Amino acid sequence: MKAALVGIAAAMVIGVGLAGPANADDSYHPTGQKGDLSSVDYHSELNSEGIAGWLADTGDIATDICGKLYHGASEGQLVDAGTRAGLNQRQARIAVWAAEWHFCPPRG
Image (tube, rainbow, N blue to C red; front, side, top):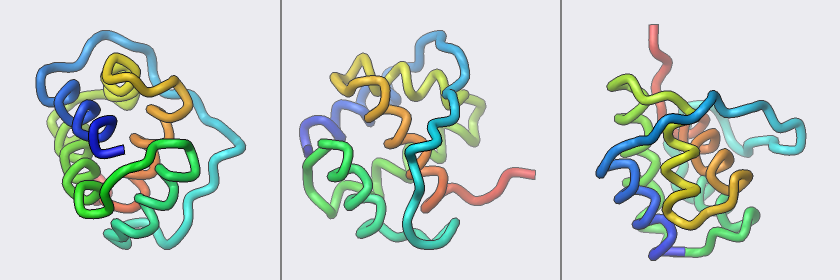
């Protein structure tokens, strides 16, 4: 998973491509509490989607995703970056959504 997650971060740092918005997926239900900053829960959710890797890297990846969203990237753009990094569409969506759930402060 470390290589896949580093690939996601690299693709997101290098630049995001054009993509439509991420679509809701009724089969995804996050664990923990919104904004709990839980690397353990985020790591577990990624593992459940077949994205295996180092627990120590997950908080950094999620923080990077939040930063991209805060600076104007859309969920769809980040999902597209994840697929370019080698994840399938569902894995990329879950990586973004779970990062938002656990790590991204509300914008407003």
